[in-house]
Length: 384
Image (cartoon, one colour):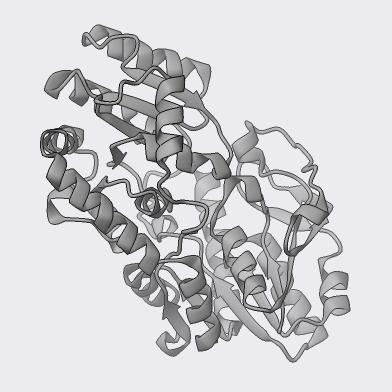
């Protein structure tokens, strides 16, 4: 089967579902193409428009990077030459990422114009947050939401199948967009169990590099480190409950916020060594840091990083909202959103009970293996 993925931005070094999903389809024997921008998403590059320099021979799939026009302050863009590319490739399956993307809307227009006899599938990259109450939003944000809602509704009405990664997410969209439930599918998010796996050598190497003793208990946070995730409250909780817990901070963080977190740590009596700022790293290196840690914290947000941590046999303490998308290892590891004090208390319990910690490590890997991208890709293709 010839499959064409269309997505505004495609950045393999950052991981993300769209990359691993496309690779798994290739591994299953399909002819896979990705149409996307030749630029990085400006949001993850501090607003800068940076062209991606990639050696095509290193990618297992056919990535076609098109000139694009970025729409400021959002993940929207227009892909030039997309219509011509679709006409040339004549795919059997058009797999569109995000129903509310302008580039996805271009696919709908091309499909209507070219009238290709192919399946049209939409993969929803959202947790329904855009459907929340907007009473206090600015006029610009209300316009953006209205625009995304309109093009999303038009596309989902025309789609043959709509893929969601959680049942709750599916229910939200069915109600908000008045969708035909028969063409909606909920499939659990996947994880690369090959890239993410526990490695004792990596654990020792990272700990030696950052001067972490073998018996020290280490937590980890990863992703974009921003004020909205309230990591300062996590640091305060560590300072109150157990100052011996160290914290790996892995991800992009601006200098101002980094200084603020260091100041918070100093004010509550944590040592300079308590916080270990790693900075932004490639997705292929992330597993090393999950291996080095003893517990992960996803208390005020959630992401596929939870499954990636599980794949590295790392227990995770997560917020209640996350359990709609990612399974918890144990009820005791679920806390209310933003309740960092409870999260650190439960982490401290794991520190004291190494048998429990060992058992949770085994369970984490088992869950990851049941959520592999291979199983996800196979399941989706069998349904559509």
